[in-house]
Each structure stands twice: as C-alpha cells, then as structure tokens.
Length: 99
Image (cartoon, rainbow, N blue to C red):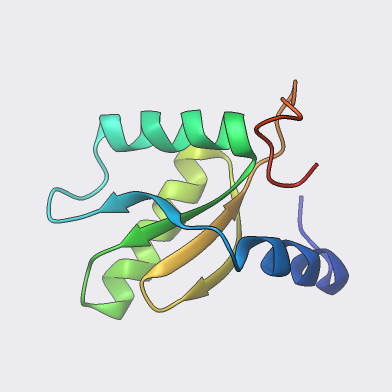
C-alpha cells in the first residue's frame, strides 16, 4: 500500500502535534523496541518515533528496517523523527490518531 500526496498531507498535519512514542538509541532495533512499536501502532495507527543515530544513512536504514518488521508505512521523516502509519484491523476509536 502506498499513499498519495493528499493522504500524506493529511497524515503529516495530524502527526505534527504528536510526540515520539518510542526512542531508538544505542542498542538499535531490539525485539522489545519492535514489540513496543507494534503495540503503539495497534493502538494509535499513526505514531512518531525518534531514532537517535547521528549517521544519516544508518538512520534511514534503521527506519526502513522498522517499517519492514512492523509492516508500517513511513509517512514522513524529518531529521531524527519519523512518522509511521499502519491501519489497525480492529481500530479503537478512543485511542486512534486518525479516526
């Protein structure tokens, strides 16, 4: 699934006010980090993550790895922050950021 420009714009505007729910540091992408990202995506569908890696290529590769492991879409990446989207199979309207 890919997003068209109109959808990206909508999700970016929603994501603007969100705070990162997960920060990936020196330990990199561990099993617990993936579990927490999956939990956040199941609850909120649209989340921000912070990747505290200074090297840009490593940061981009890490975000790509996270997206493939969680089956999420990268909506936007600015600096060390990425906005990820994965629509829930059974969305909780009280927790969802996109509903």
